[in-house]
Length: 199
Image (cartoon, rainbow, N blue to C red; front, side):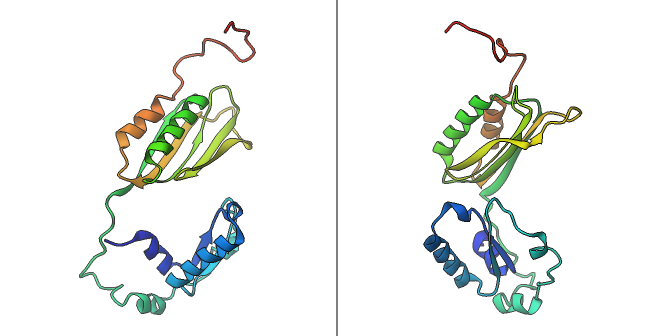
């Protein structure tokens, strides 16, 4: 079975090393040495929040069949096709409507605790009841980052919807869909923002 990550690194001509703001310089240097052990020629670009100048990625004309054949002489052979890890997949959940923010956060926390080693990546853009801003989040294993972004507001004509993607090993599609949909707001809330209630 092919190791997808190593194969991607080996054949890359550009490698984006993201979230560099979250680790110390010595860790970054160690990671770069590991990458260089797999691919000595690729340009490694350090990024934060995936920000990179487009000209460093587009129209760079860097593919070289000769270099690929040096790394993998069987690259053009179709006799022994690659066997990929079939336990790795993605699950997408998309629906019109809004989510209960607190309920979603609690469910995501529970999901991370139970499946973090198999949950490689998750991200989403969500409509949250009572909020004009879109809630944008992403995560890797146990690391979660998300919030309401004032740059991205639901337009008056825009359909309020939720889109979530999960990537990992042995994902339970039905359980993920059920977990997300249990956080969906159904009907109107009993109280409005600013209402006084007795606790």
